[in-house]
Image 1 (cartoon, rainbow, N blue to C red):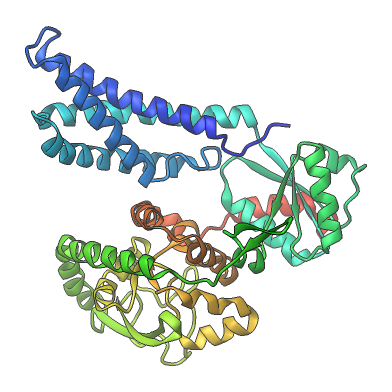
Image 2 (image 1 turned 120 degrees about the vertical axis):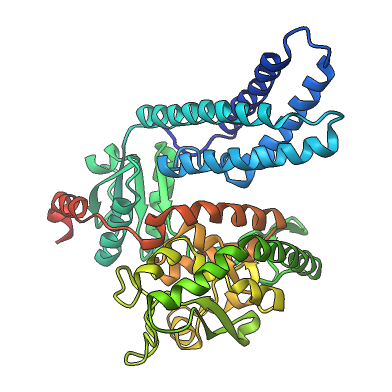
Length: 458
């Protein structure tokens, strides 16, 4: 059985090769421009190499190039390389202006950047294919009697579609002697299994070098990130409230004001273009405001570009948007896919009603429903709502509310300024990944796998 978690040593090796390509690219192009015996001196080469390492590490880390190396799909890998290289060139140019005695010529940097990007793309795609050939398709068995859960898991694996997993069977009762269990690589545990059954399955997997997939419950997330302490000779974990410290709030507010102001200036041409285009395309104003609940569940008005027909909820009342929602206009589909409908919320950020990063704000009508179904939903109001967040970069518009809440609670529990930076930059990947914005479905694959499992699920 081959494990597929990302080995920390693999991250180091991959990072070393990425940065080596960047450094060698600069050295080769410097020699091509100035010659091997140039009087520009070796010192400049060393300085440029050091700047290249710093810029490369920052850019590649911002786009999460070294986590879940095994699990990323090919499209996201390609997007990540492209965006990382663009920001690498920007960061390198900025650093060279301030830190190098002689800034590198733009012609050298751009030409080297094209070759570096091509080589890193080739190396990363090759790595992606090698990993899949080495690990192959991993066989998954779902364990549990909750058939709606089984169907939901099946649908998630089909929409994943990365050539990594295949749900081969479903068993209602765990039997370690079963041939199905012995042949499986991964056991996916039903959330409703009792604690004793879960413990038995986990122990079996650990002893037999198999992987366990478990969806964490909300208590696990709320009690995460604890601090170990000792009371006499007893080890305990201490957990505080789901709340940012005063220092974290100050840093987050300073970050919001700085970045939101810059983004407003940069995006002003797009802002003006949409302000004119939307009313021309469909009846109604370009902007609309809607009441949402913010920090500590206090109401405020959110600003958005209109992506639906005017008065979309006049006859239905509040309704959550769904995949292929007929109320969404053709222009609305594009701006929703690219998250451009959220641009006016930069004004909410400047007013202090929102943050750039945080849980998406929701209407009181839906909040009351969600709290009845999921009492833990109230804890997401312990941080300011955001324009983007963990749930926005790792889920879809159509993702169930309980799964989005898991990301929101992780964010509230594990907040750092570096996490905000990573989420902000990875939102760029979401803006070009229209599949993620629309949600996913693959009916033909669903039918074929349902036939495979029919004898056990029906």
